[in-house]
Amino acid sequence: MNFDMGAYAVYIWPAYGVSALALIGATLWTLTAWRRAKARLAVLEKRTPAATKT
Amino acid sequence: MQFLFRYANPHEFMRLSGAVLPFTAVATALCLGVGLYLGFSVPPDYQQGTTITLLFIHVPADVVAELAYGAIALCSLLSLVWRHPLADTAARAAAPFGALFTALGLVTGSLWGKPMWGTYWVLDARLTSFLLLLFLYLGYMALWNAVEDETRAARAAAILALVGVVNIPIIKFSVDWWSTLHQGESIVSGKVAPVYLWPLLIMMLGYVLLFLTLWMVRIRTAILERRARNLMQAG
Image (cartoon, rainbow over all chains, first blue to last red; front, side):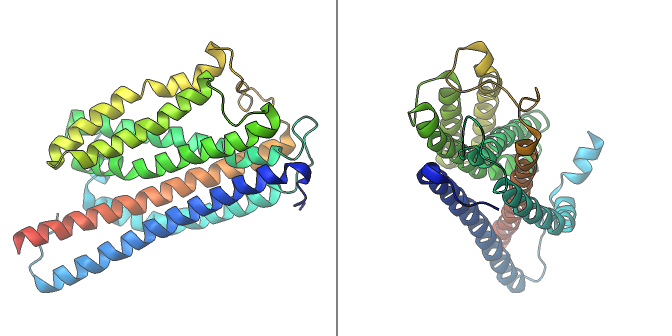
């Protein structure tokens, strides 16, 4: 592997950095929302045992 | 159609996506890992130098940006014609990812454009139609949030998505129809050297898998949120 991007490093690394941040951020955001929705539903289902599922 | 309806009800979707997700998640990580490894092992291009490595994150982002729009348009059609509730949920869930990948395509493209073309931005047909795609995504999401009644919001958003679909072939063929600064199609026509083609294809697959994985989780989240809402109303 070669990480020496020469004179173009100032364009290449920001592009990789922004992409990595955005994609990792999107993954974390998606997982957090999923866990939150799951926890909330669990609380509600406990409160109303005869859960009506849609 | 029968097949689609069988698997497109929320219960079946939860079951099926739950079974598929671990595999798509692992495949995503594998593709991105191998893709990055190969991508950073290529020799500099004789014209583009080391900026060729930008190809491996630019093209995949663009592909997913258009794919996500196609997915939204298809779901919108299913929703308008067959009134399928999961279709609306799926369409809405794909939008933020579509917008994100579009933005990434624009940012990585402009960081490639500066050293290669001498400019970050130019009003050329490909770049402009791609910027329009970002606005379409933003407008689509704004419309969903602006209309309070969910059924009406879904209908309006679906119509917007279907009208906007005309932009997809414009993006695709812009480089043929107009004299653009953006280069023409080179992957399908075999103009990319194999040493660059493989990392590009693997990264592309990784990006597509990532989108599919996140999209599925997002739809699952929306289904649970709806269940919670229904429970709140019942209780």
